[in-house]
Length: 198
Image (cartoon, rainbow, N blue to C red; front, side):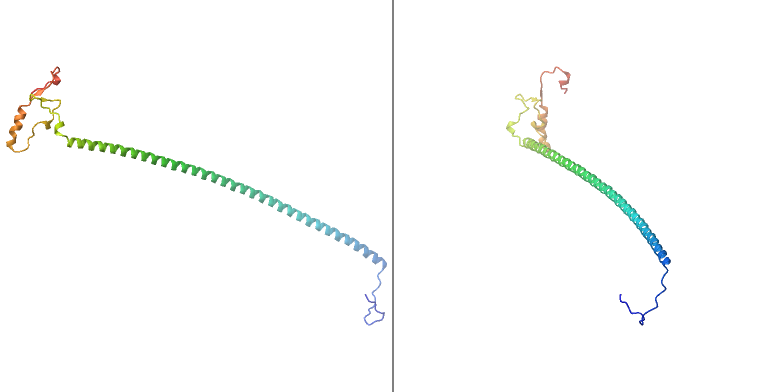
């Protein structure tokens, strides 16, 4: 700060010197006001601190609640995933059993089909054998029902043993002659069931 000489161009008349009693009163007022201002600042700071602390506690409580809800939601998701896995494993087990049952049924059906085909093949071969034997019977192996004395043995008699009527009336005579000459040979009849009434 530069001091100017008195009486300079920029000099102003000095203000009235304050009274000493006024200075002391202003000083006390200033200190009181300073204390009031300080107390107001402290009070405002305390209120702001309490509000900030309250907001922080509320935020922490919200965060804790959110964390609890997230943990609960995560546990529910994990439980649902576990249940889904169990259902999937159970469904896969049921499907495997169903496939095994279908395979077993197919195997049994194939076995039955093979057995039926084998039986049908045996029956067919037996029928072919019977047909072959019945058609191609050698004449010399036939047992004749006609005995040496000209009588017919009923136990061996077959209609194919006798003459057959084959056509015109000229062939009727040998057939009728044979029919008239048929005689029956049977053991002694002791029961009326076995007798033949002519």
